[in-house]
Length: 229
Image (cartoon, rainbow, N blue to C red; front, side, top):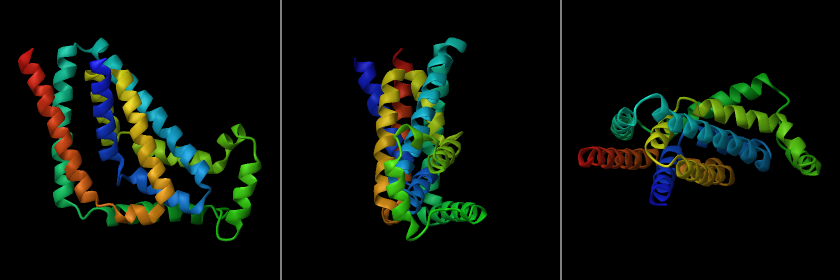
């Protein structure tokens, strides 16, 4: 039970601090401004849940392919590496303005290439049409698929995905999945409901520094457990 709670709490804290101000966070906020929020939220959450489960499965399987001693050492190095990476980002980069502008530019280019995007006064009509659709058919909506694909491929190989793999290799994978999903749900819901105004108010510098400190703490804890054993 202690292992489950520890995996859950570590995963929750790591996910929240990794995802707030992330590219997928900004993408969800911008998509929600231009499309029905429910479909954007469902698409983003579905992608993040699938990614979290896949990452945890890889982490859970790792000790069966490599000795648990080595997976523990690798996880410790990853925590320190991600901590230093996040601290570097926090001290050296300008932060959210550039990342938000980059995501917005990519999405604008996509909408220009696809002129059928919902805009202006048509959005209200489109929202009512979406609400009248059967729930399951909404999973085949182009908006749902767009939100899913942007989020899934945006997270692939991301720092948070690799950290989840490492955490699942060292902690209870079920707790890691639960904490990760809850953290993703909190961040994505905030992005979709708060929109660009919330995204602009977030200090990515503070988030990056906080995340870096958290990863360093995880690394120290993992190192100490190695020394004790």
